[in-house]
Structures are given as C-alpha cells and as structure tokens.
Length: 364
Ligand code: PMP
Image (cartoon, rainbow, N blue to C red; front, side):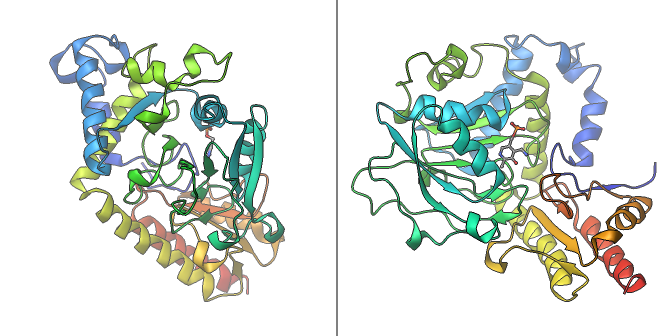
C-alpha cells in the first residue's frame, strides 16, 4: 500500500498500531470467540473493556473522583443542547464566548433554551484571534460560561484557560474541547464540564465524551428527554442505553497507545514540534498565508491560503499524488487546512512542508 498522510479534520487519522490491533482482534477478542462488534454491552467482556477505557482516561488526564465520565453518542452537536438543558439549574441565562463557527453553533442552540449573553466575540476580527479575557463581559448571573478551546475550522486555539474566580457567584466553565481533547494535559478541576466528539484525537465518530463535576448534575429543564439527562447516564455508568461499544473499544486502544507514548505531556511536546515545523514554514514565505494571530494559532488545525487561489486545485492534486490527502479547507472558509492530530507523525508534517516549499518554488 502506498504511504498516505491523512490531514482530515475528523474523522481523522488513527495510530496505525491501533488499527493493526483492531484488525488482529476483529474476529476473536481475547479468546472470547466474539468480535467486540458482537458483544452485549452488559456482558463481562465488554464491561471489562468499558471499565478499562474509563480507568485509563482518568489516569491519563488525572480526573478526580468528584467528576463523572460519560460515554455518549450524538456527537458534540448534541451537547450544544444538553449543556443548557442540564446546567441552567433554574437560571435564565448563560454566557458564551464566540470565536468561530463551532462557537456560533453552540450559541444558536443554547438560544433555544436560555438568554445567551455573548461575553466576548472575535467576529469583528473575522475570527482570527482569541479575545483577551480582560475585554470579556460575563453576566454574573449566568448559569455557566461556554467557550471553544479550539475552533477546528478557523484554527484558533486558546493557549490559556479562562479564569472566572473573580466573579462573585460561581460560574462554572464549560468547554467544547472536541479538537484538542487528549492532545495536551488538561486541568479538569478548572472546568465544570467539558465535552468532546471522539473523532479527532480520541477514536472513531459515534462516541462523545462528557466529563462533568458531580454537583452540577440533577436539575434538568422541564421536558428534557431522558436520553439528554446527564444524571441518568451518570447513575447508569453510561449503560442506560446501548453505548457506542466499538468506538469505545477503539478509544481504549488509543489510550493504551497514548500511555506508551508517555502520556499527555509527552504528546503535547510532539504536537508543539509538529505545529512549529508547519507554522515556521508558513511564516517564511509570502506564497502561503495563515490568517490566525500568532499567539492564538491552533496546534491541531492549521489553516492557510495560497497567494493565488487559482492554484488551489493544482496544489491539492499534486499533494494527493505525493500521498498528502484531505488538505482542502472547510467549505465555509475555503483555502487549505492541515489537521495534525496526535496520530499524525512528525514525518507526515515534514513531508508536507517539503512538498509545500517545492510547490511554492515551482509556482513563484
Ligand atoms: N465542536 C467542534 C469544535 C468540532 O470540531 C466539531 C466537529 N468537527 C463539532 C463540535 C461537532 O461535532 P459532531 O460532528 O461530533 O457533532
């Protein structure tokens, strides 16, 4: 098979070792005579897989006992509704920070359930930066503050965690951490709740992880469907209904791979090195342009344009012929985007950088 480097924003590249192990275990998991695909979620085999996934996740992040870990389906998009349904807790409003396309979707959905106070927005700057916290205007009566630590489409990443300790009342911090989850260490104690679709750094599409502080659970909006109630899932160890069993199994293999790599701190260093390689090249040429403010550039999703968009098709075609695929930017913004998640090796970024230099010199 020709070697491919897949820069998709998600579903995205998985570690090859994980895919090989899944292949080896496909027909007979650990002598059970069954594929994981065929197991009852309540059988002892799958229960052992699920318990290990949670234990490894808790160990890698360092999740304290007063936080619940939920393995759900429905994608991060369902969380846009589940968060207000569960966390308003009798309050009428919630604060949101708007840094791009995914923030906007979360805001739009929240408006169905509460008054949304936009604490800060970088819309005026075309979503190319993170608004500094001293410019934020947080509603002190807000039930929570929601932000998007990494905008997957815009390539804008917070390299800091908002600090809400100055507010009189406790306003829990809520984050859609879909595209940075497991790419760097995470101090979960700073958050009331985080959620992530798995299909970037964690595993296949179909699995959504929610980590939530226990004391925030138990009050839902009237009319909340049972399946949208975090407490129901927490009380049933994510087995109220059939969880996404195979994606959980793959996520478990990804966690084992991460542990072998040295955990989140080690992964972060590799991700810093990969991002630096790509951004350094982008900054030394005027053939390519990255629109994002330097301090707020994503380590995971690197958007860039060519100085002449008439060359876009040729760029993508030639990249593909070198095995560099899925580099087209999101349809809403155009240009290019290289997503360089955990499973993208440094070598893949190096090959991309060499190709980009060559393409630029051939079309100067
Ligand atoms: N939030 C962010 C930051 C995302 O990147 C995505 C998916 N790319 C979503 C939400 C939506 O996730 P899903 O498709 O799993 O609903």
